[in-house]
Each structure stands twice: as C-alpha cells, then as structure tokens.
Length: 359
Image 1 (cartoon, one colour):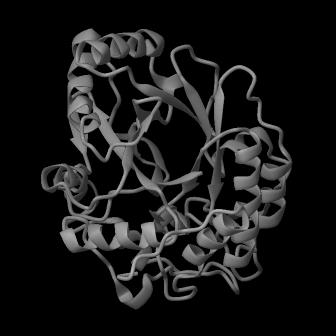
Image 2 (cartoon, rainbow, N blue to C red):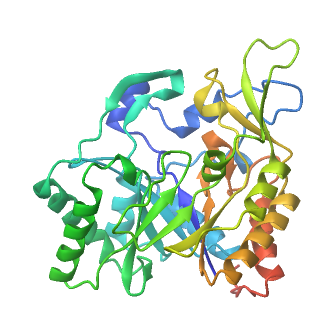
C-alpha cells in the first residue's frame, strides 16, 4: 500500500502572484490573516514552532520528505500548472529535478483549472486562462513532462510514469491528446504514460484514454451527494458559511461502493477541510468534528477498503493545503498527531514502517 499526498507548491514568491495579489504573496499570506468565524472555529492554522517555510529553501524540502517518509507517506503528488507553454509555481519542482534531492518518490497532477479571482468572489476575472491548443502545443507539453518522467524518483505504475489530470472534461480534444502523448511516449523510450482521471466536485464523464481514476476527497463525495450539507449563520456573525459534519461525510465515503468494473479506481482520503483562510468572506466551506483520532480510524478503514479492491495506491488530500485546512504537516494545535494517525492506520492494516537510527 502506497500513500501519496497531494502537494501544493505555492509557498514561495512568484512574479505572477506579486502582480496579482501583492508583493511577497504566498499561501502563508492567506493563512496568517485568517480569523475564527464562530465560537470554537479553529483559525488561524499556524505551523508548529512558527515554521513558515519557503519552498525555494532546500532544507524545507528535505524536512518535508524526511517526516513524510518517517510516518508512512510513500510519495508526493506535486500540482503542475501548465498554461500552453507557461508554467506557474514551478521553482520547487525545478530545484528538486536540478539537485536530485530530496530522495523521495513523486508524481505530477496537472491542475488545469483556469486561474481566476475566485478567492475574492470575482470568479469571472480571469488571471490566466486555459488554452489547450493543437498537436504542436501538446507536443511541447509532452516534452517538458518527459524531462520529469525520466527522473529516477518518479512514481511508475506498470513501468509507466504516473500522471494525473484534475479536470479532463475541460480539455476539448482530451482523447486525441492522450493518444498522441502515448505515441510520443513510446517513440521516446517509455512503455507509455499511466494517465489517471481525477474524480472531483466538477463534471466527471467517462473519457477514453485513461488507465485509471482516483476519487479525490472531499470533492468527489461532494459531487455525489449534497444531502449532508447544511448552511447556517451563527448569532452575532453576518457572514454566511457552509458547515459540514466530518463524521457523516466520512461515513458516506466509506459506505459507498466504488464502481471498479470499467476502469481501475484508486481511493482518496482527506484530513480536514476549512477553506476560510483562502476564500475569506466568499462563503467558505468548513467541516466540524475532525480530529487526529477520527482521521486515523477513517484512514484505517479506507486502506482496508483499498486492499479489498486490489488497489495499491491511496491519495491523501493533502500534505500542505494550509489555506484549505487539510494538511499533514505539524501545526501548533496538534503538533505531529495527524502524521501519527497515518502511521497508526498503516499499522492497523498490518504494515510495519522501517525506522532508521536517524529517525
């Protein structure tokens, strides 16, 4: 069983974010300004010992890999932002490829959303639009990906590099693009690309050309059922927000039977969710009732379910989504308890982690 955690690279300064959001903007900018919206609301989320790292710092990336490995995370799935030849938030990955460190498995998920001012409620103001182009553009994208796929640390399935696409239904000629990529992969010495469709809160049609799909949580369950949502306002607070029950939501995930007949399916897990730091007053979505003990219990069951499905990968949302309140990294309140939860869930399923003397 290999647990792969989604990884947000927006913890370093970029020219685009400086221009769009102000000088020095990173994901920490959002989390630092967060405030509780009602009694007992856990905000702001603050990293343990105030470690507001910068991902252009090699020691930060090494620290992440070391603690991830120690507690049973097999690898990271880095979000990859490609806009017809233009890349965003690429400095951490570039440094990892250039330096060959940390020695930790990874793969990519193409986060092909258009960039808008959704955080501020201005959904229609497009900062960077997606234009998927034609074969010449697909070829340019493939040859960039090839430089990443050839890295010895890159995660493979059936000896093919594992590549996720977040919103494939947005790609007008997705099937044709994937077929072309597979041809290029073989021409360039690969056995192919193991392409995975992400099932999420958006449209999830069956698209040819994918080897598998993953259930991205909590978004996929949100797409399937709205019955466990409730919107409320707390006395004394004018702001509206959507509240969800953590336990009911996880029960829905665990009770659902995944359709594995047509294509290989990988399950997902989420630690918590509270995107009030990122969206501010734009109707945040907040889960209540999460705890490390509960997460360990639910992850234990999800791992068991994966094993019963003969599925050896499970994707966790996320390693460091601090602005959305779902992260494994240590924080001020729980310290390393969520990481301990991962270790315990693996042990509950009979997996024993190897611990070196340095750990």
